[in-house]
Image: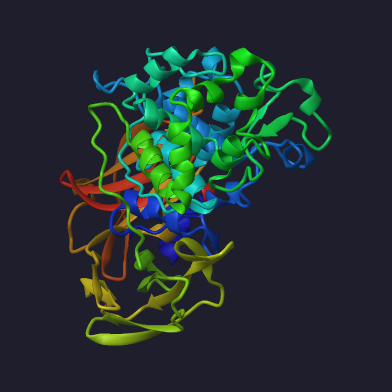
Amino acid sequence: MRVFSLTVALFAGLTNAAFYYPDVQTSLLEHILVDNWGAYASNFSSAITPCTNYVTQIGEAARNSGRTTAAQWMRVLFHDFITANVSAGTGGVDASIGFETARGENSGSAFNDSFTFWRPFVNEFVPMADLVALGTVMSNNLCGGHIMPYRPGRKDANAADPTTGVPAPETDLEETLVFFERAGFDQTDSIKLTACGHTLGSVHHGGFPDVVDDSAVTPNNTNGGVNFDTTRGVFDTKVVEEYLAWTGQKGGPLVTTANITAQSDLRLYESDKNVTMRDLLGQGESFKDTCVDLLGRAMNTVPGSVELKAPIAPLTVKPINVTFDFGSDGRLFLSGRIRILSGANDSNPKSLDLHILNRDIKLEAESENGRSAWGSNLIGTSTTYGTTTYFPFSIDDPSIGKAKSFSIAGQTFSLQGESFIVPSTSTLSGTTLNIIVAIQQSRPCNDFTLETASPEVRQGTLAPRIVEGTAAFQKAPGLSGYQLCQSVAQLDQESTGLVSVKLLESGVLVDTLLVNGGKAGW
């Protein structure tokens, strides 16, 4: 590999390989949804494991804060969604809340804390708005709710939403219902959505001193949180049960606070003489299905110009980082992993047959598995989770560059080895991208163009902006039957997450690589 050492040895960044199945966006978001714990898990799930966890602060302050990230994420979604005007086709889940944290209606640190955690996950294919919705999906799915479908495709706003008005503890009933109606929710659905949203978490003296007085602040509860129910980290019906039976937390501080003007939940629940709350209690376990529907409607409320894509389904067979590359001896090889997702009641495979170039290659499972909320089985109060098993491979057959596909468990996946970005020598160091591509046949380097998209700091919000750029290629020494071309591109500033690198031939997309794979567990 000496031909590379002269040009790229100084750039020692981390990269992810270029094969993203079935497409880049789906591959990344499916990773967050499915790879929850254990081997190759996303860092996303760690924030709400356990579901009483709180991130952003560190040490004792976080453990004793009385705050709950899972509930915080759902609050971010609600505040982003509720300023929607569905009849006008404006607002909804678009991450505009990041520009609106100074508004009195958005008191507390939930928004900036959440955006701080999510920011490294933002890239060209995963906008902050999709993460706002994903936060609620994960809080529901991992904390006891029924599995919630997730549809991607949201777009980040470039400024604050001009529409204001979020129900606050002191907002009267009539105005509260106007806000909900504007966003597409009638009185009954407003009560149900509020109960669903308040099955997790607390109200804190720090953010709402008019609701929770300073007596709640203790060394073990530094933010002075008072819970909505006695299971603040479990998505269940307790908030409804305890309100109607007047036991436990009695529905939480927005019901019981001594400040009558701040009893917003009580006003809403009683607005139909508790008919809706009794209906929710009677639903039993189906309460969780009601919440899946209502929270789903909220997170899928987007500006009229945005069209969401189909729900992302968990992939039972998923190629991970399958790509062509060159070894230290200059030989071309194909490597990667195959992830198999098994249900809680299924046995985990120990080996797989990979079919390529008219031959079968037996793959052996890695020793460490992952766990997934998808495929889980709940028996009583005990949950058995689904399992992810990984099968690595590396093939350096002399004819591997001619392979057009490979098959696993009856599924066939396409390969493209005619022109590709070389992962091992395509790096990011600071703001310098050094990209090497390999091209079969004798095509000139100037037929190819590099496009980059980098998430970078944006003023006014913690949601990054995506900065795009282009660069040309120059010829480099050839290797193993391939022409090599090199491009060096400069970013405006250091990226906050994965940088997209796209290879185009005469304007047609040929390959994609995400650089800086160490960011956010990607």
